[in-house]
Length: 539
Image 1 (cartoon, rainbow, N blue to C red):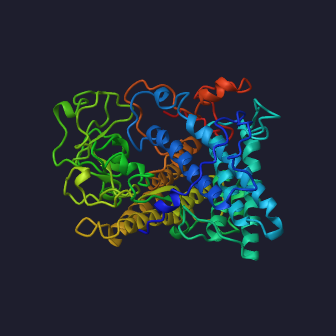
Image 2 (image 1 turned 60 degrees about the vertical axis):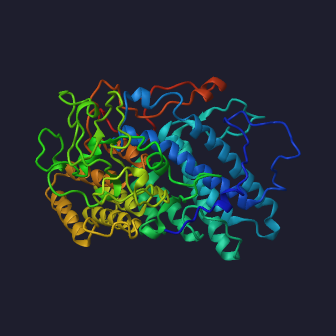
Image 3 (image 1 turned 45 degrees about the vertical axis):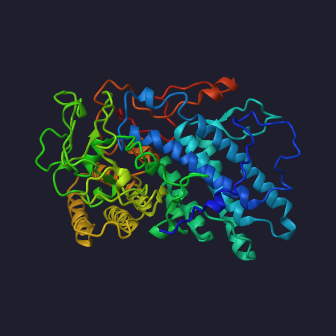
């Protein structure tokens, strides 16, 4: 994989800090302040791109836990508290101010053509970030945000209004990108695709329309978006590209730094997710999901890395014999934990199953059973899978089933599976050479098994199958499974093994905003965002 995230680029980034909260921007003028007249649009956009990846990572981490990709320790209230989104909230509004700055630069340079490519990219990121705020919190400051002189305590806009405004902004962004093509404008750095190509960003804009309209149940909006370029091939995937530089600044994937350094693996994998990958013994008893039957998912050795060639026991398996647990141990040397398992943590950082080679740039599981720091790995040169071609096909399969949009849902689901399998296999380079490498035969067998299951399923079960395959392909991304689970109630996931409280249908406002803005009142985690009309009692 090409190392896109170069240290020379990152060290040149200027931190355009303009304020931590929606109404608390710095009002003092400094001769060193970045202004429209002295700002470099390349540095501004680079900062916007880096900030957005940090925002996405921040949303994804708790979402992966509550949706059972990784172990959630303790209750939902502990996982989604008043402090959970402090950073993502502040960084979002800080980033929006920088996007406004970039818009001002474009206006001042209008006589020489402006910087429409830069602005178009930034507008797409802005639309995505506002949609994420709505997806997670609901009603958020928009029309009064980042205007401290006029609105020191901004009011919130409804989530529906914010969504609608972002769909309009996406059209503006596409127009700017087309203008850049027409006048051969200066091109920016692209930290998500590598080499800048406006068509990749236009594909993202149209795909975000599909994403938004699927959430809101707008079939016409999805059909209209299909008339344009969308993310439907792996080459168009929207993903942040990490590097291998260890410091000044750190460029490696967080999965790598949290699992492959001197401290060992810092997180437990979810037994439920392992089960859905058919990781455990085929003849295991008591597991609650039928997916434990059949061959292992071809992606398993790419997603997960086993450090120990011994099964957990004794103090390493504190759940042993506890009837509350569905799994405790799934088998085949995969050390994970059940959902909401809050047992004490043994000294097992070099025994528990760790993140594998995809997407964090770790190691491929070739049965070597080494401690993670000693493995042959990608050195952290991974990706943040934000919105992939596989996601698009699964979304369109769901829309075809639930909204009657164009396309055969089974065929669309198959495209999603194949896009995911091929992406994961290609990611490993030569590190998966050997008897455990994913083959075309493995992929075809998996697809045939899922297609047979899908073809014989009821309408409701078809949705669950598509959701399960979307969920498995989204490994490393917590946001899309969180939306999927609220939108459809699928896939069928393990219940918490403790009294974990109600599943969070939204996140709480950060306490830093509540304390500083009397116009925003705290909400319980049972609050539903405007598009969440699913009556299911999720757990």
